[in-house]
Length: 453
Image 1: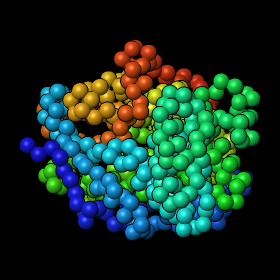
Image 2: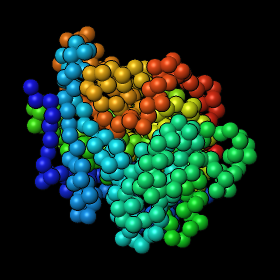
Image 3: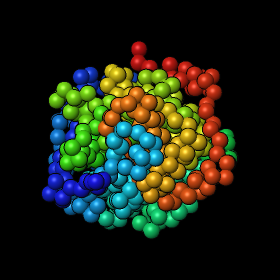
C-alpha cells in the first residue's frame, strides 16, 4: 500500500500563488498610525526591500519564484507527503489522513520558504543585515539560515519564555551565524520600558516585533523581516499547498478537509491558499480549518478591528482579528502561536466565512502529539500538534458518522528541540491557562480609539 508521495525537482512550483487575485472581497487597506489614512508603499521602504513591498500590495495571481531561490529550495523541496495509515488504524477511522512534512528543511520547519526569499530580496537591494523576532525559534532559525546563504548578518529577538524553554533553538541560530537576544531586552528603548514595568516579563511576539523594528529603523544598513502575518510572507509559503495538490492527485484522493496550526497565518496560508484557489476557480468545496491555542484565541474569540501588529504601536494599523496588541498570552510551549492578531488575508477570509477556525488546549494537543509519535514515528513541534488534535477530532467524527473523508494537514516542523515540552506533559506539569473573558474584552475595547472615523 502506497503511503509516500514524492515529486521530482522538475515538478516544483515555479510561481507563488497570490490569493488576493481571487478573493471575492479584497482586504481593507493598512492605515497610517498617525493620520488614519491608507498607507502608501513608499512608507515601508525603510524596513523592507522594494521587491517585497511590491509583493505585499500585488493583486497578480502568480508571481515568479527567482531562480536563485528555487535552486536553494531544491536542497529539500519538494517536501514529501505521507499517508498516516498507522494513525488511521489506531483511530479505527474510515478517514484517509495525509500530511505534508515540512520538517525536512535545513531549519526543520516550513519557515525557510519565506526566509530564503526574504534574504535574497534583501541581498540584491544592498542590505547588510536583517533584524527579526522569533517565538519558539523556528522563524529565527530559518532566517539565520537564509542570511548565511547570502552573506547577511542576522539579529534575532527571541520571546523570553521560549528563549528559556528551548535553549538549543538559540544554539541552532548561533550555528547559522545569528545573534540571539531574549525579549524584552535592554538593547532597545521599548524593551527597557517593558522590563521597567515588569522585570519578570515572559515576553510576547508583539513585544519582540517592536524591539526588532526599533533596531532595524535605527540602522541605515539594516532591514526588518517578519516570519508571518504579512501578505508577502504568506505568498512565499504557498509553494507548500501547490506541491500538495500535485501529490494528492498522485494519491488519487483530493482532500475534503485541509488543516493547519495558526499563529499569524503563514503555516495555514501555505497549505490552504492553493486549495482555496480550487474552491474559487474550480467550484470545489474543500474545507480549510485554522487551529489556534485556547490561550490566544484571536480567531475564535477576538474581534475584527484595526490594530497594530506590535505592542509598541510602530507598525501600520492592520484590519485583522485581534485580541489587542497589549494582550499577553500565557507561556505555552507552542511559542509560534502566541500572537495577538491574525494576518490580514486570513482575517478577511474568515470574516467572509470562506475558512473555519477552532481552538485547542495545550494538554489536548500534546496528547494528540504522542498519538502521532507512537503511530507515525515523527516528533511534531508543539505548534503542529494543534493541527493533529483537530485532525484526530475530525477522523473520530468520520468513524462515528461512517464517512470516509480525505483529511490533509501541514506537519509544519519537527519537535526534536522541544523535548522539554513533552517531558513537562508526561510529568503532568502542563496547565491550560485560558484567558479570562473580561481580560480579552478589556484588551479589545482599548482598540476603539484606533478605529477610523
